[in-house]
Image (cartoon, rainbow, N blue to C red; front, side):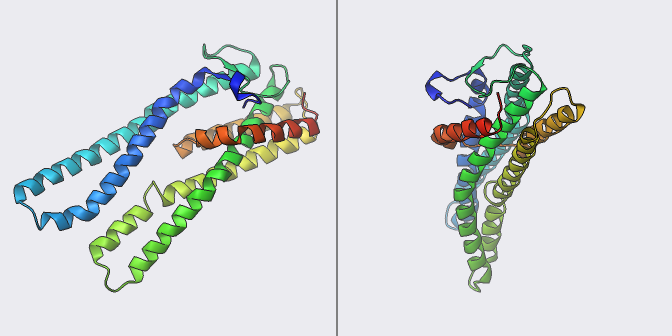
Length: 261
């Protein structure tokens, strides 16, 4: 989390680029598949059976590509990127080189490498993450509400065909709309709780020699990392960089208020 993005070095970020690209491709494929699944049954009735069978084959191929790419990203690309980030995170916190990837101005606190630096880094990450997630939720909530209204309209319409109702139901309650919104809500809540717990800890003058302090910091660190892993998707880097300057100023004020070195 840099106070000056121009001087920021983050070599770990290259592991997230394939995840972002895979996410964009699967997102496009999802909407193509969703649109195709609505129109194919109607198109089949008005075209040559041989052409219809080819269209169905293309549709099946798109579904398989979407599934394979989504799983590859979720179970390989993203865990690999998160592990590299975690290694660098721990390297920075304890001054032990676990990775050759460098970061400069990614964390913003003056603690020497010890358990308190781990806590400060986790608190900083959770602060930025909860704010970015909250900004993402503004649009995500609006989109979800709009789709739910559309679903209710179709559900209450006596003229709505069962096939159309099934399609809109699958769309609304898919991983791209309703489930992703709920996941993001939960993620923001966990990030906020993690930040609040660490804020309270440092407010009460955390002591690196106190075993309770160490246990509390490790508990917050694992909660933060577990939340990222279980979510299975990334926060918006575009929103992060847009908010970075404002959030950095707020973070500097917070750590000054808490007398964090």
